[in-house]
Each structure stands twice: as C-alpha cells, then as structure tokens.
Image (cartoon, rainbow, N blue to C red; front, side, top):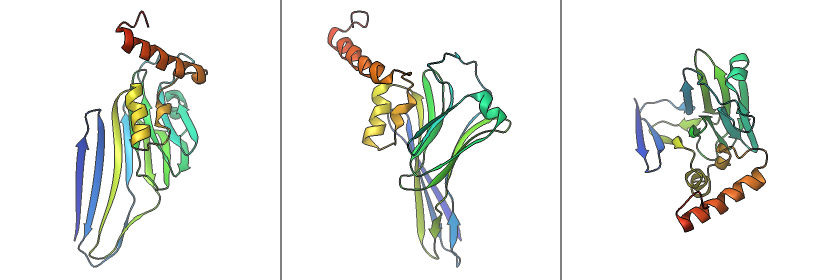
Length: 194
C-alpha cells in the first residue's frame, strides 16, 4: 500500500536535485527518515599541505568540520544541527550532499570498509493514511569553481557552502585578492598579466 517515487534532475553545473515522494494508500501511518550518503572506497594520495584540506568536510550549523582520512579511520565524528551539508573534497573536486532546508539532522564521518560522509533527518516525514509526503535533497559533484560554489550558497541558500573552497588561514585576504585577479583576467584576457 506504499508507493515510492524518486525524481532525479541535473542542472548544467553538476547539481543533482533528488525529490522523493511517498504515497500512502495503506490503513497505517508511517514515519520516514530521509538520509544522504557519500562513499569513497579508498583514501587517495593527498597533498598534505597545511593550508589545503583534502578529506571529509562539512558545515553543521555555524561550524566548519574538516577531518583527515586517518582521523576518521581512528574514530567516527558525529554532529547534530539544522542547516549545513557534508561531503568529501580533493584539491580541485567536491562531492557534497545537502539535506532539505529547515530539517534537523545528524551527520557523521565514519570509516567502515570505506569512508562515508552522511546525514539522516531526525524530524520524521509523517505520512498519514491516504496522504502523500515528500523530501528534497541536493547532491553536488564537480569542480570547486568559485562562481559555482558561491552561486549555490547565494541562490539556493546552501548554508556556508562557500567554505568548501579552502582559502587558507588568510582567507580574509586571499579570497578578495582572487576576485581582483579574476577581474583583471577577464579584463585583459591573460592570467599572467592579471
């Protein structure tokens, strides 16, 4: 008596939107807890440069959480919040899942035969008899281009998604300097001159 529907769409900048719908035609009420998970089977070789993070990453509420592969192998890391995202990042690439806005969730970074970054919504989606419920989550898989990452943070309200790009300790200087250089590049057409 329960029908599950999943609609997956992809925009032109590699953001998947996953809309899940549950139709309850039964004579019982059900609670569902949507979740998202990213799995990396093997830890890659990392640059191990102190101003560049490669590994598990996420924002839960106001806190940026960056965990190295070795640290997660030793101990699971758990977080609780109501806004944010979790993912796995390389030097240039990011895979991140973003829970539905306005929902409380538990997030964790864990190693169990593979590295996993996941969340589960803690507020159940309650679907009463002869009713329909839904949940929407987002999955980004792509290059950490400033305009794309900042665009999703601003236009779709992905909380602190811009922190996916590691600007180093002096971010207050390096990020504005990037915009100056990028402007000069667009103006001159030559990155060396910029």
